[in-house]
Length: 212
Picture 1: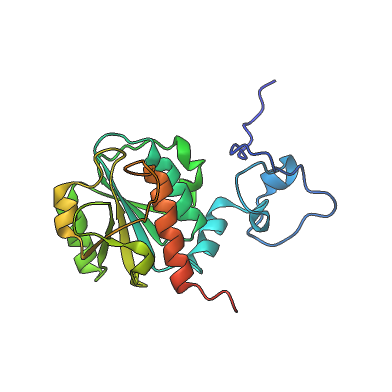
Picture 2: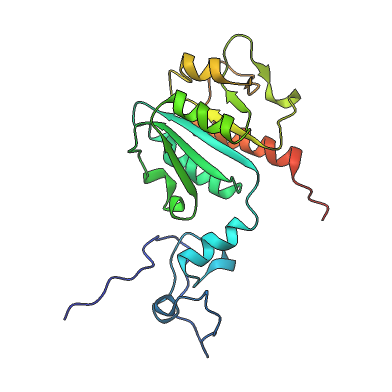
């Protein structure tokens, strides 16, 4: 006997089984998930919801900052950066360079996150100018300012480079500002995905009103 695959394939340690009791009637619920359970990597609010319903709901509350990543070396950090962008409610993730990217670290969060591809830095810059979004590059290069003292624009694109080489010269030249994360140890740099998470959280602390 052949059974259909469970659409809840995003295995996590916090899944839920089949819905107990009378099923809800709201259209955002997925009847297959209600029947079989939901093991996706989503917060409890979205348990048993259809994927497109989750995306539509997130679209109501996404923050006005974007995240961009140069993709010249198939960096494994890109997936983790996409996952953090989803966690912090970024509007859109932009992949610059190679269209294919390593999605393993994304933990399937890319299904709920808007992702746009740009063939090169020039195409990305054209998009930012058309949408009047300043580019805030994150890299510890000469002339950068520390992010802890920098006022991140509410509407902007946070731009990250590859693990190791960092941002390309073209990306640095295109940036409105270049900022770095303060470090106090012996290492020259921190992991690219960790740096991205720190930068995004800096945006959150500056622009989200937690008193509401």
